[in-house]
Amino acid sequence: MSISHAINAAQSGLKVSGLRADIVATNVANASTPGYVRRSVLLGETLVGGRTSGVTATGVTRSADAALTAERRTLSSDVAQASLMSSTWQVLSSRLGDDAEGTGLFSKFSKFEAALSASVTSPESGTQLAALLDSANAVVAELNSLSKLVSQQRSEADREIADGVNVVNKALKQIEELNGLLVGVDGSTSQAAALMDERQRTLDVIAEYLPIEVVPRAGGAIDVITVEGVYLVAGKAKQLEFSPANSFGADMTLDSGTLSGLTIDGQNLTPGASSYAAVSSGMFGALFTLRDTDLPAFGTQLDTVANDLVTRLSNDSIDPTKTPGDFGLFVDTGTPGAPGLAGRIDINALIDPSQGGSLWRLRDGVGAAVEGPPGDNSILSAMSDAFTKIQSIDSNGIQGSFSAAELVAHVASITGQSRISHESVLSSASTQHDLLMEAELSETGVDIDSQMQDLLSIEQAYAANARVIEIANQMMQKLMDI
Image (cartoon, rainbow, N blue to C red):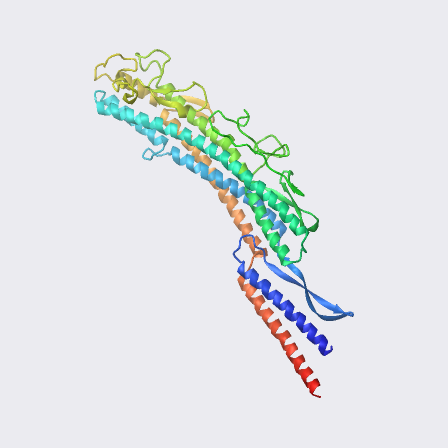
């Protein structure tokens, strides 16, 4: 090899070593950057006249693993769905409660039963009657509050669907734009690697809302489809369509047309729909399930509890003073049989002093014109018997024989089982997701120790090439001196 060839080879080595050092520095700097994929320099030999004349950088590659990333992204959808379902059922379960000493609905029923028993023992005590009315009001307030919570949760789910549609549509448009940029860029450059990282982060955003797959296209572009096979990006980005509700009522349903589904190009993506395109997981899966299935079912169970309470204490055999068929202590202030009874239940105005009624009617009957004997506990005793009587129920997912308090305990148990089930699903999905994240990071992430070792190797190569140039320079000087 001639001196000039040696110098050229060494110069190419210095140039490549500098590039490799830059890439290592970039890797280390972005070690904790979400979505960053480790880079490395692709090397090749330089040939002049069929002879090796140095080294050249043929490009920059990303250490991506498409299979691992796709599987991890699918599990991200499952985790997002399971997390939302679990947190919602935790709220519902805690609000019902299963402890008489707590603050949930079961506690309110237990305290009402105790106050009713105390009034039977001391019917002449105005203090006991007032305590009984207070506990009845507490039951009503909790049922009203739980019914309102269901409406609020459904309304919030509807709003979050609308927000999610905006997020996904923006992300899909961004995928289209990144595809366009990548088509015009050499795929083996650092610029292309950065664009691919940004595209991967955008895909991860979409995957939180619905499970997706990626189809590679020419020039580094990709198409995006749902796992059910519906195109979200096919060259151009398509747009999801959804219309949020302006208000929310217990009677509003998807089937009645009062609530919107999710569509794209006329295809029905609504989770739970009888369509091949229906989304199966992700935040959309959870939000639609909560809005259209789980929360309405929970609301109907609350209505069953409220109806059982109204019916028990409106039995004509309890109070001979009231008109047959009229309400007793608890009333339905709306249309009987309509959804949302738990939100309408109230205290009979004839009994409630705050509504112009008289407290003594708790003891003497809602239809009593004048106050009766203070020691007469016959109506209170009949109310207590009705409240604790075991009755059969088979509706809205509730089946069995219960007293009024036992019915609430049963609903609390059903809710608790749903909470435990969703927590179990979340735990399993999170574990699998974490394992895949670790596997993906081991393949594509930045290992600082490994990068430092590479940097030492680069430093040695740089020093060796610099030494070659130094020696070649000395040789040239000696030749010049001859």
